[in-house]
Length: 457
Image 1: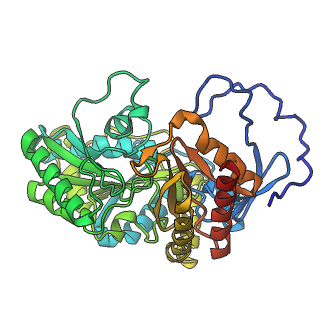
Image 2 (image 1 turned 90 degrees about the horizontal axis):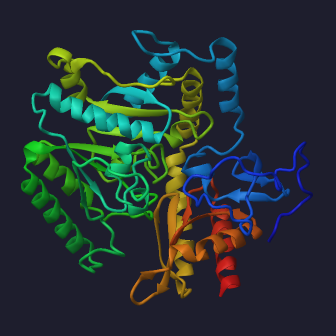
Image 3 (image 1 turned 60 degrees about the horizontal axis):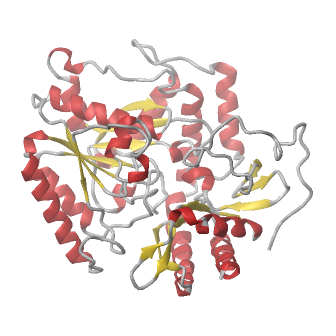
């Protein structure tokens, strides 16, 4: 059902305005046949576009508006901070109360992961870059400077800086940017639906992946490897949910060879998978964790990289120059971001948003399974309130649709006509609504995709 009302009146007609900007992850070539979705307001789990359509936000902004739009508590915290201090830096022994309070909160929140120190930045790519550089610094401080290589997974996404692009495992992000870091080894993702061995048995797949991991470690030499990087559930690469025992066995192998585990919790942190941490849901604790998105629910850009005692103690007691953190950003620990994060974390804990993500996510995943009768749908999958609809050209062979065909974009556009925003991502539809979603709203999301698939059929 379309929820169209009168178009929003603005001083400028943005619908016909020339664009002097590029959309990220989109062809730069002008496409007059693809209209721009212009969002002008948001409230709760809904946004309103410039045409006056009130739409259920099935994307949660971009995996990040976890507490919903227009929360008065968060706005009040930001406003109060602006009334006292809108900005100050944290270089050269300077600080402000917000970085004390937020770092205390994060260390306490992740005490079972032995969290000890926090480095702040502005976004997920920054947080990953911080993890890359400080992981190498750890090994210099620990007296093993030869450990410079990173292991990561195919289909993984770790931001858009050169370091994060290098360890990311999605080829499309590599093509246009020339040489990347050399010291990266990609391993196969824990993906039951598509893997090199064509196995759908979780134990067999895990056995093969762990064998591959150990073989690559021995081939390069453990003394050359700094860290293993991974998302607890792979997000942009297709919402790939690993078998239950995979991460515990990976952690065992890494411990055997002294290799750091770095969890990219940019999407999965603060409740999206149904646990406060994605990695905690698999029963493992990483040495370094990268956060962004849900830490402020998108209200103000902020990110954090959290280090456990092993890493923090080694760097702080490192000899010579190795204890100097030659890394940071102008907006590291921004006062407005810290205020927003503290207010958001209050909501996450008080309203048990991880628990809601688990409960409502179970409804979402169950409802999505009903879409698998369509010829175009190869599989639906997810964990908590992150999900994907895998679109195929052939169900038997699992051949994906041509990502350039525009099929996913047409489904997304049709879903909007039924009142829901879902994200088209090449060969998939991605669903990542606010963690305040209700069960009825989960059914509405699936209903809009169902109607869109019927219309295309």
